[in-house]
Amino acid sequence: MKAEITAEHAWLRQLVGEWRVEMPGPEGGTLEGTKSVRALGQAWVLLEGRGRMPDGSPSHTLMTLGYDPAQRCFVGSWIGSMMNYLWVYRDGTLDAGRRVLALPSEGPSFDMTGRIVNYRDEIEIVSDDERLLHGNALGDDDVWKRFMTARYWRIA
Image (cartoon, rainbow, N blue to C red; front, side, top):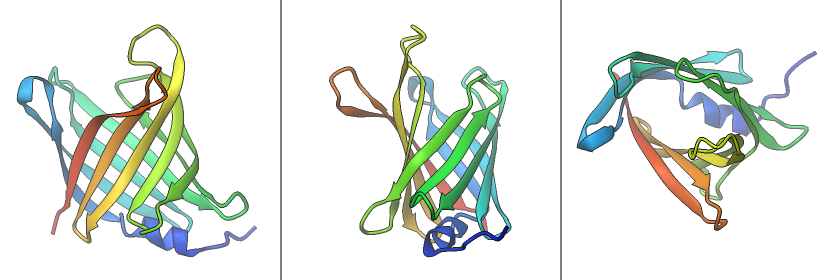
């Protein structure tokens, strides 16, 4: 077996490096952390995050991202130490400007009813040294609602 490496794989490799992250916390505070991104060969990137939850407990996350030329889409997964759910990304796409990677998935509803609903994470490239991660959920009204944005800065 040999992985077919494409321009989409090169797009993912721009994420490789060490990053500082900030996101809004509860009651107007800020949550801070780090993200270490490394390549696994030429076909995959692994994004490992560390930080603190709003209650001060540690958090550890791992995202995998790749591109499947046969399906013509980005694929991957996300897990976090704060939950038991495995998030699977399928059918990920880049926008026409190649600045925003949309990663659809399904997961537990925020209303804690046990329903599975549609989500979409978006990695937005601002510059070589800055990017955003947006979390979006599809509401019962079939309208996407952004519930989170994290800002990343490359550590020199």
